[in-house]
Length: 375
Image 1 (cartoon, rainbow, N blue to C red):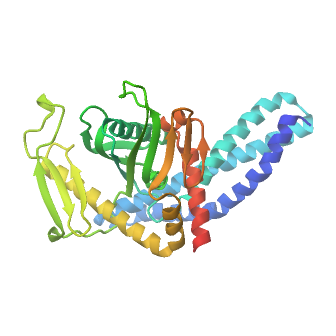
Image 2: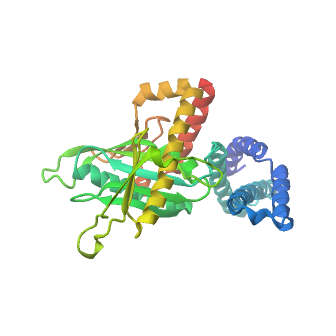
Image 3: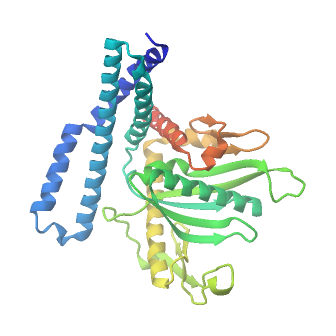
């Protein structure tokens, strides 16, 4: 037997076990029935759109289920294609089939990794869009530049995953980079993927802003919240907040807004502060800021609940590394190390170019395993 085929068959045993686990979770037959029932509801109930918000949320859930079924069908078809090709090879010992078998196997590897990742996205709000805020730590220009590098990393991730990317609030650094930025990632399971990024990110490199060429360490914090949709109710009373308006900042000249369109909302009980200045009107900025504040309050409540349910995990995380979650070392060697899952890679540039799937998968595995252990 050919060595390549032997290796593929060896790895295929584990893959088939993973496929069986995924199949039992997805339950494709039940999913098909659920999709059909929802489609019939839209087709036959004339009153379904009398509540547009409820109907829109139901339709969103329907599209997610359809995509999950399509992903499963693609995975199943690729598995069957590989098994059929292997049977042909065994029957005819035709080595001309090996390139196609190898190509199909690599495709199955990729599909299984993606399916396994989605399988781990089982949190209550994992399917929601994500609102992300980046703040540089102490360190002036160097930290502001690091924050802009993280912003670019998530923009590239959005391109790779097919997420829509929208800046909600942006404050440029005085020399370079950003002082703060908040953006929205829209796409299936955006929050589920991005929740792995919440915490402090540490960079070690030779600073381009240091004429002496010395090594610098910079920090930036990343906050991630699920975007509030119509199925989630977070009530905020006017007496609970303070709203300030101010002129939007810019680079100068025509880019500076001379009207008081920028909005800052402070939630008095929690002291959460949200700003928005990217829209042209004060009304639009206030609406966006309120939506971000609702998402932040939901995130606080989620943290509180998770701490109560998984007290052991919360204590373990705090004792191990506090709020710092990941190191990016660009000098004197290249290494990215996630401090939670202990995932390491020397492909630092690829990570900074948005290739985060392996890091996210290992984090979700770590989170899933540790949650089970501490319950």
